[in-house]
Image (cartoon, rainbow, N blue to C red; front, side, top):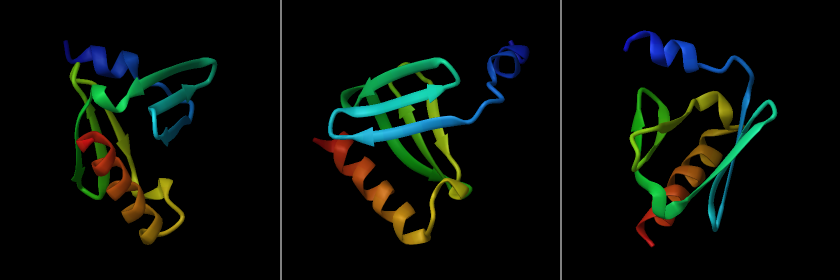
Length: 85
């Protein structure tokens, strides 16, 4: 079971887009979507923003994904508002 997360890790950069309908993600040629209703929680851990999906998967967004602390704070507030609607 410990090997599973390592085997599923993708070395390519992940593009994560958020909007009114939810989250869109792309890694290489693979893409997917999650509606905000599928997101269980938005939290912070070790400086990262963690979007946890109801199926147990999560998107971990590191601080380096944001151009500034203000943009990161805006993203966090937007994500929290979006799952509470």
